[in-house]
Image (tube, rainbow, N blue to C red; front, side, top):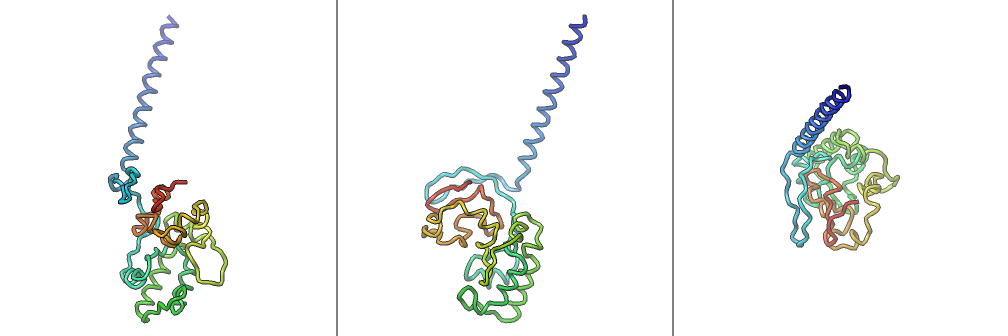
Length: 205
């Protein structure tokens, strides 16, 4: 009799456990489905290399929203998001526009003031997103103008990539050419699992 009761209890507990696991699994699947705002999309490129479908990621650096900054600065190079450098670095850059990394990028007072305000208010050390906060923590000491590629965080994230894949690659040319490998850089997405180096393929360390 006791043996029969024990078997019944064990059976009930087993069914309850299975039900709990299945319920939990269902909740996890629903959470994964809702994790991304956009549906999965193919990342096949014109070079013929199929890289599969990646989920569309949320920005981890706030996208550029200033028309003045995008039009004035983005006309000459990629409009780097303010969250990629701390306030002090942007102040130094905006104070040296007459010698902007070897070029004269001087602006009239009104757009210069507007862009300076936008960069400082949205700088890495004022941002709430995690990758921006990482860029705010330390950089290589130098008398030269600040460079995103010389920040501690950038170097730590890119040190494993062989230079020949970047400087020796005519489709990239420089580590500062973010959008060449981070195809969604203009939207503030720098997901390392979505990096594709031209001529090399997907890079996922």
